[in-house]
Every structure is written in structure tokens, then in C-alpha cells.
Image (tube, rainbow, N blue to C red; front, top):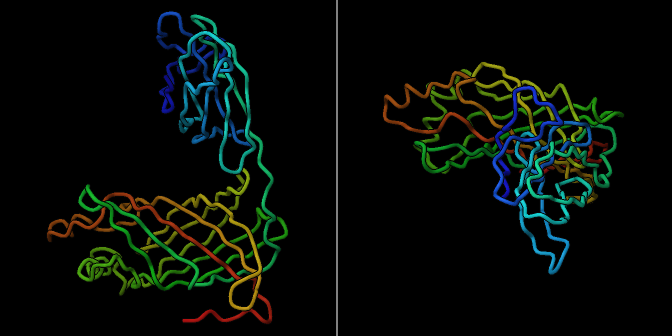
Length: 304
């Protein structure tokens, strides 16, 4: 059976020749692999499909690698095809032979990027607010999710000659928070939480662009909210650039996500609980769905 979210059942500093220490069903063997991204880092979330090579080519195991890039399956003796696939990556196909009692060290496989989208040309790109969304998801009293968004913001991207030297800046009007409930939104704007009278803006400015694989990038920088700055990593997928929109202007798009920890920003949840206002849990997922227009002498002004 596949053990996708695998605990490492090895010694603290394993000898790669010792294999994984796992119990095997009678007569079965084990296959394991360690998947690395194109820059040699462990890669979680890669889909692994194990198929018999004989007969009807039946799929016998299917799962994704764990956060350490590991996959493990116990298999009956025989020959199998292992297909590895992931977003922005070239598929990788392996043939493995399994013998009874076999338990070898994980096979290390480094994935290669798929054909990349053409990167946006250097220059300044301005957010197009009607086609950009800044959303968040938070837990409500440990049960349902609260979905919200910020409706007023500005910002842009400076694309450098070398993409890794690029910068992005976002300024959000904290008072524009909207969760679809007026009472809750008023509490979120209050001094107990965002305190928008004293801290009217939420600000992010990147200081590092790092390519991961295919269209995947990480963008790091300080996020300042409620008077506190903390380093945040945006997991970003570049979606390409096209001519279109208001006047067939050049525009690019990206989707970025991050996880924020409420207590990092001294947001006073205990006071709100004391007042009977259970608003959000300890973490908040932030999502930026961005379209930006290339700035030139004839860049159109987005409608209000």
C-alpha cells in the first residue's frame, strides 16, 4: 500500500545502504523514492503512479510524495512502471523490479522543468485592480472557514533584466476588509484586531525572487501589518503574458499564496474572545490573484 505521508522509519543519520526499516507483508517487497526538484531540494506533492507491466497494466498504487519528497509502496514481486508527474515538471518514468523481501534505500530522482512560459519583459508593471483580487481564508471558532477580501489596494512589479533581481510591492487599505458580515468586519477593523485608525495600511515589499521549477517561484519579503513586520514567503505560479484587456495592452498574471500566523502580528484575539467575538483561528491563508499591465506612455487607466 502507498504510504505517501511517510514518517522516516530510519535512523537519525541513515546509511543510504541500510534501506527503510519497515515491516513487509509475507512475500512482498518495497519500492521507495526520494524526489528532488530541479535545484536539488526535496519536492513534495509529486504524483506517483505505480502500474503493472504485465497483463492489463493495472494501477496498483497512486499517491503523492510527502513534504520530504518521499514515497513508499509495498508491492507483490514483479516488474512495474513508476510514473512521476508534477506541475511545471517533465514527466519521469521508471521501470522497477520487485523481489520478495526487497527493501532498498529510496531511489533518488531529480525532476526536470517542463518547457517554461516566456517571462515578462523587463520594466514596470502596474496592478489592474478590477482584474486583481486579494483574498484570505481563516478558521471560524475552529469549525467553518471565513472567506474575505480586501477591496482597495495598489502596487506593481518591477521586472529586472535578471528575473531574480525583480521586485514586487503591494499596499492594502486595511479598512477595506470585507467578509460579507458588517458586524464582523467592524470588529476586524477595531483596535482589538487590525486597528485601522492607527495602522491604515498593510504593506509587502519583496527582497528575493527564487525560481523553483517550471512556472513556480518563491517571493520573499517583509509583510508589515498592525505595526509589526515579519518575513513572508509567497508561493507563486506565473501564468503568462498576453496582449488583451482594455486596449490590447500587454499584461501578465500570477497567483501567489502564503500562510500568515495571526499572533506574529500581535492581533489581540483573547480580548475579542472575552467580548464573545470568535473571529478567526491562529493561521490565515492569503491569496493574491494578480493581473498587471506593462507601464508605457499609453497604458490605460483601469475603470473604478
